[in-house]
Amino acid sequence: MAARRYDPERRQRIIDAAIRVVGRSGIAGLTHRSVAREADVPLGSTTYHFKTLDELMVAALRQANEGFAKVIASRGGLEDPRTDLAAELAALMGEWLGGERTGVELEYELYLAALRRPALRPVAAEWCEEVAAPLSRRTDPVTARALVALMDGICLQVLLTGTPYDEAYAREVLGRLLPGDGGAGAGT
Image (tube, rainbow, N blue to C red; front, side, top):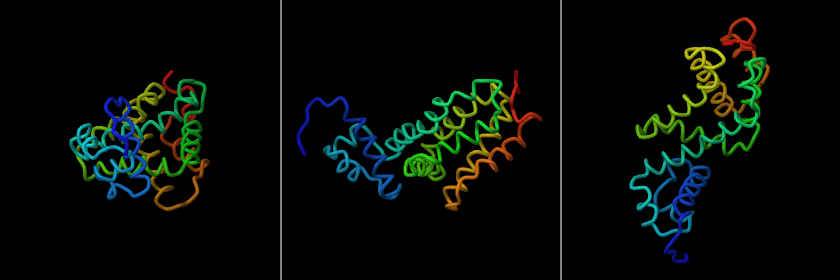
């Protein structure tokens, strides 16, 4: 391990290492020591940047949450009022779940860690709000939150049961939450 005096990327390397540790060993394997080893930094560096494991998990969850946000941003269909919203959301979930599985599982593992770690709850809530915000522009806030909850449930079922993602099913049940046209033109 090389000594480093000025290392502006050290904090980011520690977050990246924490994500790799959780991806490989789960939340139970996350310790300051395991992260320091993975990041190739002195143990004191992890505790300098993150006093507690909860602080480190908050940073890791924030970064992990970017995965789904990137899928949403890359498609752009949520902004177009002519897009069938149920079909677009079903396709978004399919793209996300069809991507790198370890990353998706990691996002959910950190997300679900909020059940036992109150420090993570605001970050989990931020994720829900960030996904609901563009949906609220197409529907209304209550329907947007219901869509997020349903999407969460579908994704969890796929991840936990190992069943393949069924885009047609997702589109059908999402459409049931939306006005008559499945969300095409809703909110305009």
